[in-house]
Image 1 (cartoon, rainbow over the protein chains, first blue to last red):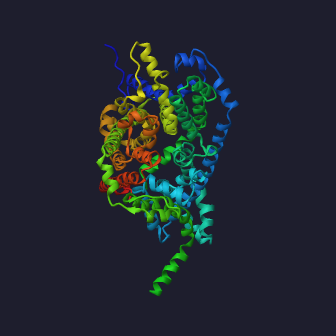
Image 2 (image 1 turned 30 degrees about the horizontal axis):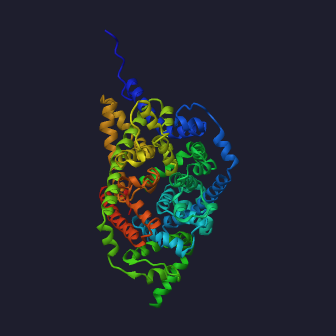
Image 3 (image 1 turned 30 degrees about the vertical axis):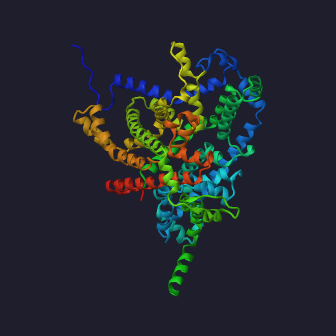
Length: 303
Length: 313
């Protein structure tokens, strides 16, 4: 009689482990595959792509898409500039405003904390919708075709304020604030010298959510930006698409349309731009992941 | 009266540091949240832009009562966009939940911790990409003449499908794409909740001779139920709001697909930017906000009854 291995209760069986690893592995690959596929397409030879379509293993590799972009890359470079400016300025401004607001409503000594908490939370429950916001931004604040249209509408978010407040209440002992007051430090001094250093993980979390939001934003550009020199990266990717479709659909003269298309980014260069726009995020996110996880779990089980 | 004013001013003065801290944020809420809320009044008006500025435009526009709403609900659009919004979201909530919980449990149970971490990171990636990018990804699969799927069909000798003009395929595509984008993100919360379960419960179960499967069905899942119900209720509260990017970018704004891809958010956007129907799109937006508001209140009420700490307010 074969000796039966003792049954282990703390782990799944090796067979189950193998099968589940396989299953999860397939799903994990499916999650990153589209990105890898686009990278492959961007390194495909344009002609071989035209005859064979998008292939996982191209017939002919080529760098021409990237060469083309870097030769005629003015628009891309400008869009990169717009996106970086909006992301940096937006994130910093947003972080300052959100942190200050969250700190004030976290303080028990603040007489109007309930009112201002509600003032923020109510915006999560009800909103005026796209059209009135559009009218306020364009006809009252006159931000159409200005860089502020890309920054201001996303500046504050009640949900981030709540997350930040939770960070304060879990990471900053009230004793520290008290001690600051006893030492005669002003509110602002206490906040900057004692509270902020303790809440760095919170700042990182909210800062990264903001950075991601601004970097990936195309919606505000879709609503507010027509000026070509203010088009951010994501929005530029959208516009290439529409302008190409427009030319292809509306041109009755085939030779004319091919003439124009020769000057436009073609299949491979479009995908190369997708790679250049996502590259920074894909390379960076594994290092920042844990801050997002922190924010998500805190957001889900607040206080 | 005078005393009250004095006390009020004294309170303001005492709280001046805190008030200064909330000031920038409060101003922002006023301009970008509360003013637009007041602006929904134009859904009862025929909006005319006036040269005298924003407030003049709103005040001078003619009252039309409920005409905008009547017009909205007299078309089949109102039904289609409501149906699409609610049904898609319902599918996302149910399938997303099952997938996320299953993934979280499996990731915790895998014997190789490093491999598990690696899978988790890979699954989280789509969350970090914008819908524009995802739109391109999907296109690389669905393009009529070059896409991977049609190329495969061709190779197998099957008919190619013109994906971007066949509405009937889109419920599957949109649900799949949304699940793909959010599986990693959604499982994060459940993963954290499982990590928070007291280890001694499992040890006790092992002593009683319970295997892994029994431990999962008798300990892990029951202890996840509170988190699951709260996440689900919060999602139900937002069931009237669609993810604009998913429904706008992934179908590439293709007009042929509107019957299956038009949701309230895209409808309002097109009303504003393409057709210039300010009154009616504001009305559609207000309809969304109002029903959304009731649903949030309702789900919050239910969450609150279960566990006060998890309620939004």
